Structure formats: structure tokens, C-alpha cells
Length: 397
Image (cartoon, rainbow, N blue to C red; front, side, top):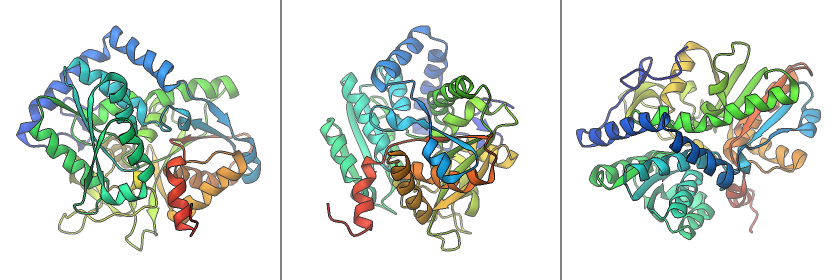
């Protein structure tokens, strides 16, 4: 199994570059510079330094004994990306791309964000290195994630609301791409997930692959064997491919990606691309996406802003077609129930995104033997979601 896209940036039929000609020089420059830094010991040493000393890596692989006992069946481990500085895995990619931007002598950073965690991570990295930063965010997401909007502004970033379309992540990406097209000589666009035109899906996967590399070493040290299952939520898909990548060559390790089932597939109010979508092109890449019979992008829905997107990373589309990774979904109701369960059983409040993965663990673990192992990626913490959850339940804070 190839671990890289081909020279055209394709994972099988997916991926590629579907962008205006004005962006091609920037993408080619980025591809060439990234190829250099992959082999550059100084760059890799700097990245490792900041990931350890600033981000707090390695994150722990926590044996969730109470959750295991509650559910019965398989032993459950949580990869604690919620313990990263800023509260999610997004900082791994933000640090890598900021270091890359500085090598290209680009002092202005732009980003898009849905849940706000990528925006916070980008604003954090930009502040640490003294770079100008502007983050685009749909106004619907700004309301849902007001805490993260304020955090970004505290960090010195400009947060620009996008009031077009569904006012969520898709529209924020479109606005960021328009900005990049206009300011390509001075600006680097830090895309937040394994989406967009080549080399972004490959590069962001590589920056997030540290999750799986650590988890593999940690589970072998703890149990002396590889896990039977890996479980992670899938929005664009960076936290999941980050966990899965180190295990792709291990056929006995099964992998489950959990999309946002929203109000249910039949309702049409969801973001489950593999349960209701088909291949097409969106925002620079060929992949599975939610679209109507005329190719128009469908509106999406999820209780989780970070999973509320019409497309999925192209590498995921390839593994879906190959059957290497199984993709399922959790509804809003199931995710909210898992959110409560993890808080009460383990004293960990997960991000609503991560709660989708826990919802799948709730279904899976009781079906397995006690000798079997599950690693679930806890991609982020739920501080950002507490106000939203309280409001949904009629609680005034």
C-alpha cells in the first residue's frame, strides 16, 4: 500500500489540484519547500523541539478503566490529544506550517476554522513567532464557538466572520482561498485538515502522523501487542489519518472513522459523506462530498462545528473504496450521550467532535472480548463546547 500520493497529488482517483491558475505558483512553491524540509535535519529538529517543549508531546495513552468496566468487553485506551497546548491535535499542524511559512519568508498567516480549535492553534503559533494572523470563520460557527473567537482575538488574531452560504466551515474555506489568491506573495494559508489541493492533504497528514507513531509505541509498551481497533472522528479527517497512518500496513488492526450523523441520514441533516455522498470536486480536491443531482453542494448539519463540512480528505476516500478503513456515523443524540458518559466515568470532558468517536466505542466495546484492545483518539477537549451544550439543555451560565 502506497503511503504517498502520486506525483500529481492523487490518492488513486482522489486528490489533485483544482484551483485557479493564480494559486498554482504558490502551491508549487509550497510543494517544493515541503519536499526540502522533510529531509532537512534542522527543520525536523526545530519541529520536534516545539512539539515537545511547547505543545507538550508526547501525549499520554490513557487506559480508561472505568469506561472499560462500564461498557464491558474490550479494554479501552484513549490517545489524549486533548492534553496538547490549546486543547486539540490542531496545534501539531499549525506549528509545522508556521515553521514552513517562515522558511518561505511569508510573515502573514491566514486560516479557516469551524470549531475554532484550528483557528486558536494557528493564532497561537503566529503569536509565538510574531506573525500577522487572520482567521476566517462562518458566523454560525462564531455563535456556537464564541469562547474560541475570543481566545483567537486575545492571541492577537483578526477573526473575520463569513456570512455566506451555510455560514460554516465550507464558506470559511472559500473566503480564505479568496484572500490567498489576492495576497499570495506575502501570505501563507494554513489549511486545518487533510483537505484542499496537493500538497496539503499529504503535508497535513505527515504533521499529524505523530499521533499514531506515539500510540503505536505506547500500546506496545503497555500491552506488548498492537490494538485490535482504532476509532476516531472524521470531519476533514486529520486527527483520524494521524492516528491510523502508523497502522495502515498492519492488516489485523481494524480502523473505524466516525462521521457526523446529525439528525440522522434519512433526515438529510448530517455530514456523513460516505453514507450520503458521492465523488466530486470541492475547494481544490476530488473526493467524496455531499451534493445534489446537479452537483450543487448540500447544506450540512452537526452538533459539532468541527465535523460540519460537506467533503472529506481524499486519502480517506481511497481507503473507503479499498475497504481498508470502515466508515460509520454517530448522530447528535449519540454524541451528546457519549459526551456525558466520558465526563462522568473518566472525569474527561471531550470535544463534541471526539464524542462521536466515543459514541462508536460505546457500540463496539461490548461486542468484543476482554482480551481485545481499542484505541480511541480523543482529538480535543470540550471546554469550547460547554456553553453550547448548556444552552441546548436550557441551562443559563
